[in-house]
Length: 153
Ligand SMILES: [Zn+2]
Image 1 (cartoon, rainbow, N blue to C red):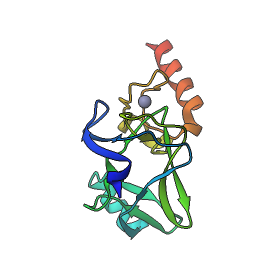
Image 2: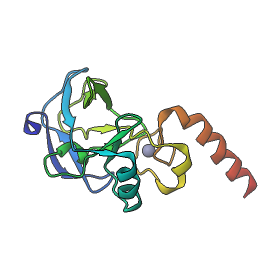
Image 3: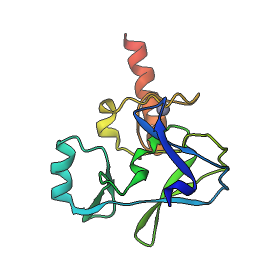
Image 4: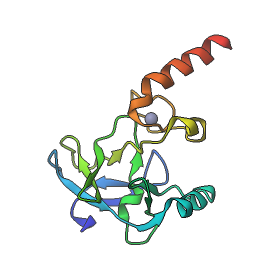
């Protein structure tokens, strides 16, 4: 199914990425982010082992997307993403946020928490990149912090 909308190849952002093989209409469900459903306890353990593919499902469970049948795990984070990850009836779908052109790299915001900010520098290269991979709701806070750091130096 993934062959329908994108191909996986080397990315300028990080490692491998997913690139549109045709133009994709806004609102399209491009691919399901699949994996193994795991408990929070198991999830914590795997995160300590630097598994970067853990997805929060709900209060009790997470999804470990580090499996061979999940091409969506190659989609990179961006501060200005063209996709979003949406929970549709308990399934995580990567949905086009706008029209995506042939050849564009697919991206979504990983939605990381603020507490791990400095562990996840961002290399997305978008003009609005704030330098770290973090959920959009924290962008203002991060900008404030970075401005403070710049002043104190
Ligand atoms: Zn960025």
